[in-house]
Length: 191
Image 1: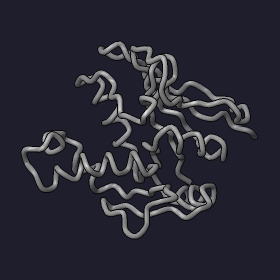
Image 2: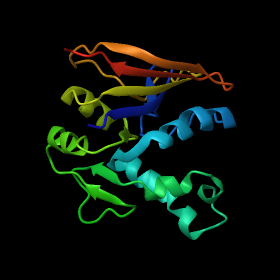
Image 3: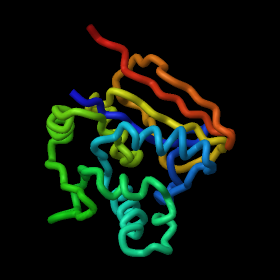
Image 4: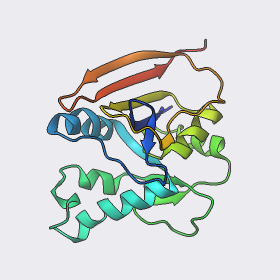
């Protein structure tokens, strides 16, 4: 059974994006790419998104297929991003979302349970809202979080109160040349 890995970055004070949902990218470097993107995409066999992040990423990465001058075309793992199968959780999208994606049904927990039946790893690049839903549904196996070297003071939090306690064990930590820190936690076994 493959694990569901929540892959998110957040400011030191816990925010993943601005209050209006504006994407706030972390400071970037070759070391960040190697330890964040390459690490995740080296394990991922399926990606999970919420609607907003899916549409944002689709717009960015698909350009690599059609425009050799696009920013995405210059990123070595663009092909991987475009080829990986994706599941999108949305209440408003209909039809074929494109970008090798499919829309999830209304039952989040059963959709994730079905996805976990294959080999490899599922990475959730979703967003704060989807992350909170997955945490509440108690379906996340690993947390792959980058703490960025800033305080935003406001925005959308990755972790909101109200979910049941979850015990984790630290699998890996890595300080990066940008001042960010990657923390990789796995659920402790309940058996």
